[in-house]
Length: 341
Ligand code: SAH
Ligand code: SF4
Image 1 (cartoon, rainbow, N blue to C red):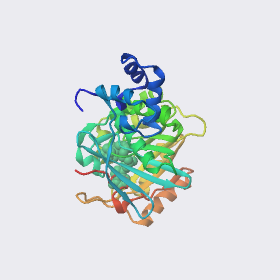
Image 2 (tube, rainbow, N blue to C red):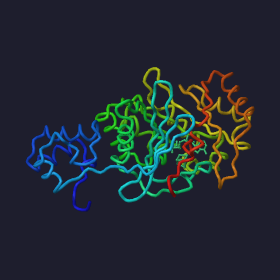
Image 3 (tube, helix red, strand yellow):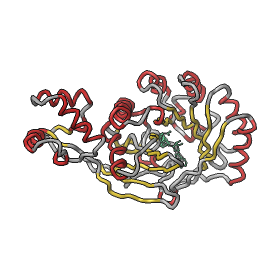
Image 4 (cartoon, rainbow, N blue to C red):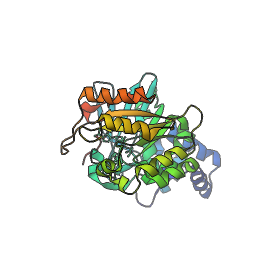
């Protein structure tokens, strides 16, 4: 809506100022925030607590944007995938993963991704654009609205489309809103990065206490250079150095994701090198057998190779879980998100 202010794009202070400039009291701004984040208002008309006059005053200069749910798919294993369209017509995906008493939402931080990892479908798209903070948060609001009143999202992982640390300012802004307005604590939020070292070093100051996951995926620079072009700029040594410097509160650890690819990074020698690389780091390893997709010749290793890899890590006292990606029947699994492109 040209010329009008999207109230969802404003910070808390921004909302207060906007209301002040209209001569409206501060508590009205707080009511608005409550209606947006807790009562899922998608239109000024939804806010029944506001008088008709007030709604009209606001709607002359402002509106509330919302994601359109273009598609909703459910997988046999309980995973749900949402395709959302943005105001400019671009689309993004979020994945809801139920697990015991948790409901984890895997959210997108960019439309596409510039990192170009060879095994990842999102990487194929290239970067179309960064998401704004409100578009990141809107994924959580929209899913909470769909789950209401029975359930709510309890955990957030930035493992959908995009590289969150390549869109750090908006991601950090989104984190403040998710914690402050939606009420999910930072300890239940995980940022996953392909290894943008300079941004990783800024994280403790910009987003203290969020959990960090690092997509490692190789144990030599040669292999990582081939699989993940970001490694040509930030080598394994500097990546692991940044991990060692990452401040961890007690009982917290860094998660290393390791996509197992046949003939590339899944040999016994790789497992042993991984043990060496991670020595001294408080961490756990999630082993993700590759989800193959059309257009890539990479293959997942045999089940026995996956188990053998895990066994070597366990024998050396590393915590290592095999993560069968959920939702692969609806292309909701890791690396399978490409929205409608
Ligand atoms: N850009 C961030 C977060 C999104 S990718 C990052 O790379 O960490 C989320 C995870 O999916 C990453 O750990 C990535 O290694 C994994 N992944 C990507 N493509 C995959 C595929 N085809 N099969 C299995 N996992 C994949
Ligand atoms: Fe981007 Fe992550 Fe996919 Fe790499 S794995 S292309 S960083 S989304």
